[in-house]
Amino acid sequence: MTHSPREVDAAFRYCERIARDHYENFPVGSLLLSKKRRKHLYSIYAFSRAADDFADEIEYQDDRAERLSDWRERLRRCARGEADHPVFIALGRTIETCGVQVELLDDLLKAFEQDTRVRRYRTFEDLLGYCRNSANPVGRLVLTVFGYREESLYRLSDSICTALQLANFWQDVRIDLAKDRIYLPAVDMDRFSYSEEDLRAGRVNPAFRSLMKFQVDRTLDMFRAGGSLPGQVRGRLGLELRCVWMGGTRILRRIQSVDYDVFHRRPRLSWRDKGAILLGGLWWRQPGREES
Image (tube, rainbow, N blue to C red; front, side):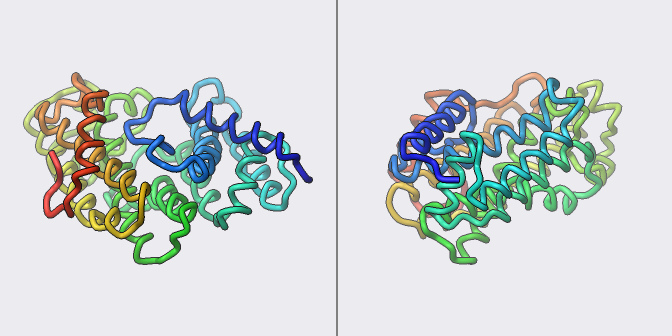
């Protein structure tokens, strides 16, 4: 199915509106990036945003599996040049222009499908398995859009993306619990003598603080492991990745600053924070330690 330039441009504008209408702690195709590349990030975001909503939003509670299955079939048709929806018209052009691997997009759908079935994680390794589909493909897709396909860069990106996903889990403990989802590994909860009953009661006691400190500390280690990535890519993408890295570590520092009480003081980046992050990105130094 051939789409006119006007249809393709309209599809990309549709995806951009979706991206701009959703708050994110971390930039999605921000204005730091060139317009030529940014539109492709918008198409990827619009694809994943809709799938995430299918897995999460109450309006889809009766047909989540069907909608995700339909989204996967649309992805397959899109890869064959048969797109019939603005998101997939734009995404099809992104796949064609940037050489995006459809498998990475399918991995994201696997994670959203897992969200509809799995609400507890026994071990940290189980949680990392989820992140391999939910988070890591995003970084690999971004690198691909900018022409990077080296496995060494992908691995650095995986460390950052997994850390970003975990930081989101730790700041959203209360929000996820309201959806009957617990991402704190059961083995770790047992280790620190903190039960699901304690969690549901919102008990912010020494056990909870120790549990959260343990998670935050090892997530910071993951950020450090990927910290050389921004210095290995060129131009505006390097600046964007520096800002993403500092945004993620800043969220974790916010959690530390409230003594891990994410039940009552959910960390969130303000415009002032984002300004400081941008300045920090411009004056970046290779992180031997995380920026505060």
